[in-house]
Image (cartoon, rainbow, N blue to C red; front, side, top):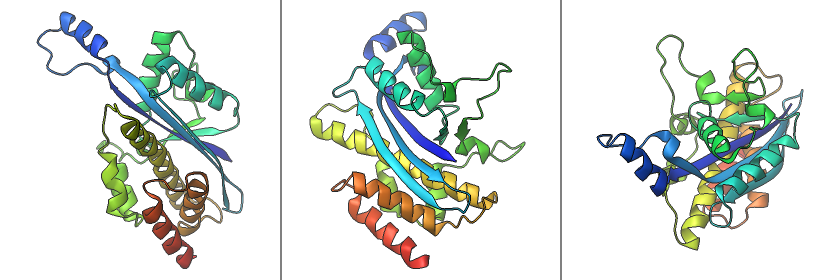
Length: 241
C-alpha cells in the first residue's frame, strides 16, 4: 500500500478576525474559520506485503513564498497526481481537513479526492486519521501524538518543537515553521505504522519502519535542525532490528 502523510499549519488572519468581531463582539476567541493555511507538508512511504517500508519524496510549502491559494494548489496537485495513495493524518478529521476545506471554499477550489467525503457522508477510505482511529470507544478518550511518540522512544527533545511559533515573520522563523510542519508529517507516519503493527500488518515490526522513515527523511533534509536527534533515534532503532 502507498501512503502520503500530510500536515498543515495555520494562523489567525487579522482581517478575518476583525470582520468576525463585528458579528460577535463579545467573542473572546476568533472562530476556526478565521484561520488561514500558512504551511503544508507531505511525506510519501510504502508498506509492502512483507512489512517492508520504503520512502518517497518529502515536500512542503509555506506562506513565506506562496499565497494560501498557491499552498492549497500545490498540495492538491501533489495528492491528485497520486490517486492510489492513502492520506495519513493525526487529528486531520477535526483539524487539518477542516481547515483545508474552509480554505478551499474561500478560494473556490475542490479538495483532493482522498479528502472528500463519500456520497453517504462518511470520510473517504483513502484518508486515515490515526488519532481518530485510536480514540477510545464510548469514552472519546483522545491520545496526543506526543504521548504516542514517547511510548515509541522518540526523545522529548524532538517533541518540544511541537509548541511551534504560530506566526512567522523572518526568513529564519519561516524555515523553522517549514521544518516543524515536515517533522509532524514524519511523526504521523511513525505513529501510523506503529498502529498498523498492533493491528496485525503482516511482517511489520516497529523498529524497522521508524528506522526507514527517519533515514528517508534525513536523506532529503541533511542539516535540518533535528538531524542529530533523529540520527540518534535511527541508530537506536537499527540496533534493535
